[in-house]
Image 1 (tube, rainbow, N blue to C red):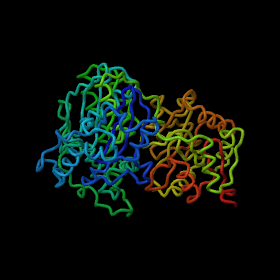
Image 2 (spheres, one colour):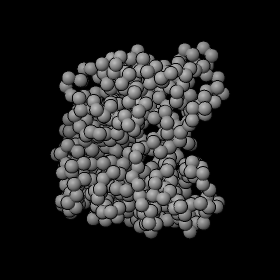
Image 3 (cartoon, rainbow, N blue to C red):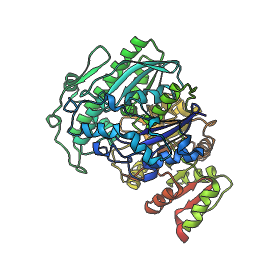
Image 4 (cartoon, rainbow, N blue to C red):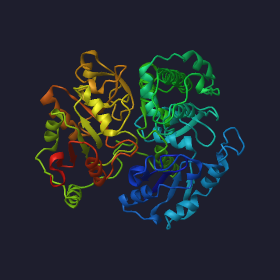
Length: 546
């Protein structure tokens, strides 16, 4: 048996993933266990912090001990790190590199039974690339990685052939599309390395008034790379204090940067297509979570199919590093068959939690039918089923579900979650009915592409239609997600609408719920109407002896 444990720890979103004989067995982000958003602060002096709880859970899930692990794959190679006093030095680079160099010692403190010599460093962007090319379903795809930064690069373009990733080009820092977007996020009063999706949502509220200027500031080089000139953000719109109101200028700035990002991604994709001759492309890196850019790439780009790793951010490098090392050991890699790689609970375990909590609950014959009736009556449902998702999207396992037929539901959900009102929520639809309602990539199981909502449906499902007439769709294959498909069917029978609102089961600033107790805490502290955990249903009026 070949056992490889992958870990991400350097920048943000620490995570662990376990690969046994080339098969992905488990993957978990530390935030889901620690209940600390993003697992830790995205600062250089947190590099020493390992995803200890995730590492331990992955091994426990497989019934393994420290001594059973053949290799630990660490998704950063300090030998490739940017030099101190170099172009990316922020005053902490030396400390970050030192901590990364000491990673084998840190790992051995978390796993006392592990020989530190079994820790393998995997270059950051190679780990991203492996998470897309090796975990994905495509045969010999081109590969495009775009994020904030790795050791001293922000990008990788290449091709995977028979599982071997051949890099063509890597963009050296300080030029970085991801860091540019992070800088804008911070300028607009949001948290960098966290709230970039808010900027993407804001961009739909204005025209790209500054696009000509950003076409001069952000350019491609014709050889697979790009340049980002220094940007004085205040020239376009004043900086925003956290929580302060945003104005039209801020939306126009967001729209301009978003549009230029999309254009550059298209140009880079066309270059790697011409270089590789590949029909398909796999993507990873934080920029690959920009579903608006992904939707445009799928519609206008040169590839027949684009597959994006659902854990495209840094958490996914834990999986990619493990797969890269496993392949190097001679293991035959089997692609992931879904994102449900986290913790799960049996019906008995869930019922024990409900009993201990003193919650009144019921076990109906068909939880999907009962929940569909609640949703049709405009109630908001916390939906907790199966194993938790790996990656930032709620995909029908740790979701808040609602009726999409009233525009006011969007405002109600944003109030429940404590979110800004300009942010959209996503639709959930069965695979066979997706093209009837939406125009875009099908299948879209990981909610990573924006679709146009067809004209005849926009007034029927207004809660999931963004201001620009689009939606970030998740399609449901009933062979893979039979319970969610039954729920959608039951809702459609009652309402004539085959779509549900799906947003993550959490409140602002907190990770998605992962354990039954997490779900009960959110249910008890926010105005949700119904909680469906496994086969059990808890209603607001019946909770805690009411």
